[in-house]
Length: 435
Image (tube, rainbow, N blue to C red; front, side, top):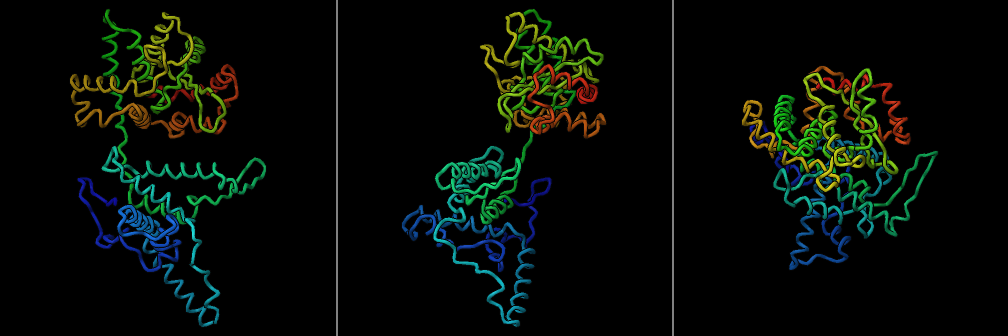
């Protein structure tokens, strides 16, 4: 159970909370549907439990845990208040002679698993698996089984009985899937409250650290034995990730054709810029779509997107590559951000040797940094320090939401799309210029 801790990791627990999630309270069944452990066992297994079977004992324990999680989805004050008013209502209705007509029956329930206890037990058992940031996995991991179960349910014969209500282009599905039921909602909420969340986000990459990395890259670039393709690929990756504030899972969408297409136009424009074209499949979209991001040729702190993107373009031209993914391995296959992670860690170690004060507060580089979010968090922090308005930062960082909403017209050909982008170019460049 998650317990409140201070900055030094000491547990700070109110004595009143010692029984939290361990026992039910008087009045819980007035807010949350309730069946006893034995009833749930019979509903799921179709028989009575056997004390001689360890499996049955385990199931009963999981049922008890699920029941308590569902009941504790509501705070003690809410339970006490509900119980008090129900008692008052009961007394009044009794004095008026209609006590049996005031409240509906709280049971019995159908002899079937209408609550969704079976998937609830699976989720609870999953929550005991070893985790990455803690002894066990996080709630955000195990909750995905709920979606998986729902998908299977609605693909089954039973799920075909769902009612669909439609108006204009809107659609609402009325389903009997148990994981959408009231009890299961309470169970998930209570489980989440009990488990809490342990989040260890990637540390933000400081601008000064990134500048030191590029000092290293520049020195290597001038060495006659340097593999120019690998070095240009590395430098372009760092700058696109940072200046576009991309998430790690987005960078693989960078498209060579789109960058080449607008390369010269960006250099000749009054506001010199580099167009970074992303091509990929977006959730909720049909087919593949383009999104264009614009970077200043040179940022206010001396980062040079045009130089490093241009270097990689030249290396591709030398070997006759003009289309496909912008980031690819030596065999020409598209790579994910994780392809660059180990090299990124090596660069940080080099910086720590040269300028230890920049990473003085970092104990474990590989544990604290990552290509998934370090670049994005670092760029966003620098933009805030530069005094950029939140709307400017959001416009840059939330491009995927805007794209999915249709604001960037994914159905347009890239030429028409770029025409629209140029109309708001100054605004679009403000983020990268500030870095």
